[in-house]
Length: 402
Ligand SMILES: *Cc1c(COP(=O)(O)O)cnc(C)c1O
Image 1 (cartoon, protein in one colour):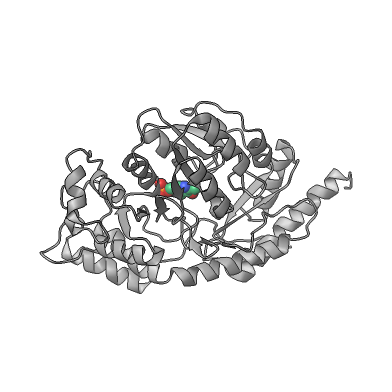
Image 2: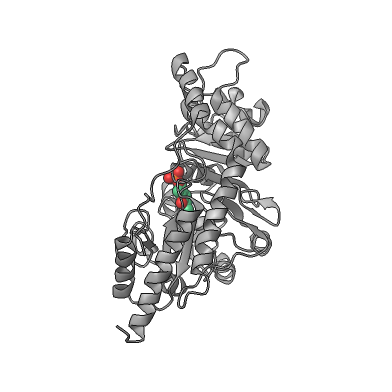
C-alpha cells in the first residue's frame, strides 16, 4: 500500500469572499468592535445576529475563544468561588481549565464506550457532590442521549452549560446542540468548524445571563451596540456589579467568520462524507470498535475516533508509529503524558485527583484523528485502509503470526 502524504493540520484556505471581507475592515482601520458610527452595526454585532439566527437562540455574544466563553458563562450563571462543577472526565484541557478560571472545582464524570458522559455516573455525582452546575462537553462531537440528560438536569436542578466546540451544527432529534440548557459555548479556533484563528461564541435565551456575560466580556458600557443582546433595562440591574474581564472579538475576525458561517451546512456535508469513508474502511476490521452514532444524532464528522480495547501501552505506541510510518497521524488518549491536544484527566494537576476507572479503561485504547476538508473522500478511504492494515498486523501479531 502507498503511504498517505496529506497534512492532518492543514485546513482549507480562506477564499476570495473571506479575503475581500477582511480587506474591507483592514482598509477602514476600525478593528475594535465598538469603533462604529451612530446606527452602524459592527461586523462583530453582525456576526452575533447571524449566529443567533443560525443557532435558533435569542442572544449571542462573540468573544475571544471557546474556553473564554465557558469561563464567563459559569461566572454569568452565578458560580461562586470553590463551588463544585460537574463535567466530563474525557474532554480537552480548556474545559477543566474554564472551571478553574471561574473559581470552580471540577467534579469529573465517567464516560461511556461511545465517548459521551455516563448518565448513571452523572446522576450519582449530581446527588453526592451537591453541584449546581453541569458543564457538559460534547467532546469530539459525540452527543449523549440529550432527552435523558435533560431529565437528570431538571430532576437535580442543575444549570446546564454546553461545550459545543465540536458540535457546532450538530443536533439531537432536530434540536441544535447548545440549545438544551442555559447556554451553548462554541469555538472558532482553526481546528473547529469555523476558522478565525481564535474566537468564541456564547448563546442563550436568558436575558440576565446574557447581559452579565456581555459586561464580563468587556463591553465598556457600550452594550447597546451589541447585535443579539437583551434590552437596555436588563443591563441597568447588573451593570455596576459585574466585573470587566476583557475578552472581546474584533471586527476582523467577525468579518472572516460571516462568509464561512453562510457555508457551514455545506462544510458539514463534506465532513460527513469524509467521516463515512473512514468509518466504512474500518467497519468489520477485527479488534477495531467504532463509536455508535444513534439515529437521533446529527453529527459533524470533523474528526473520527475508534478503540482497540485491551491494547497494551507498548502496542498502542507501536500502532501509532506504524500508522505514522504510512503517513497517518493518530492521537492516542492513553499516553501518560499529554501530547499536543490529547491531555487526559491525570495531567490536570490543578484538579483534585479523582478515580475514573471506566474512563481510564476506555482512554487506554482510544485513538483519534482529524479529518480536515483539504482531504478528498478518496484520501479518507486511503487513510481508512492504512489504519485497517495496521490493525490487521496487530491482530496477526497477537495470534503469534509473523
Ligand atoms: C477546542 C475546544 C474547546 C475550546 O476551544 P478554544 O481553543 O478555547 O477556543 C473546548 N472544548 C473542546 C472539547 C475543544 O475541543
